[in-house]
Amino acid sequence: MAIKATILVVEDDADARDLVSLSLTQKGYAVITAGDGAAGLNAAVKKRPDLILLDIMLPGMDGWQVLENVRSRPVNKGVPVFMLSALNEVKNVDRATEMGATGYITKPFDIARILLKVERALAARANGAVPSR
Image (cartoon, rainbow, N blue to C red; front, side, top):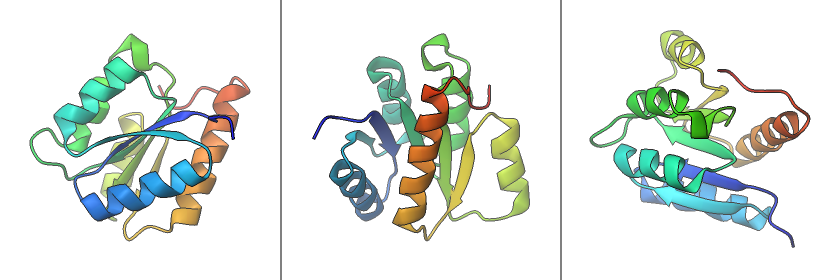
């Protein structure tokens, strides 16, 4: 199976990170993982993934800081970023949108929903639709 795209999963919970990574790999995606914000930002800049799944509550640099840094870098222009979080208040969803996130997925998450959102975002990007900011 040919690699469809490269996806960066930034998640400090090893079980959640492994579940998402395995599911994406089984669907033909190359997956890069990071367990904290600084490592996630470093991977986003150096590896230039096609899409990022980003937890908000991370040790050290949180997901908000990572998102802000990713959106400020030309190398990551147009990369879809989905926030993953147990924070399901509307204010957090609104903040993610305002900061340029493509979408917001609440935990506990449904892996089928993540896969669908990933496929749709990558298809939109391939067809010239540029996600937020």
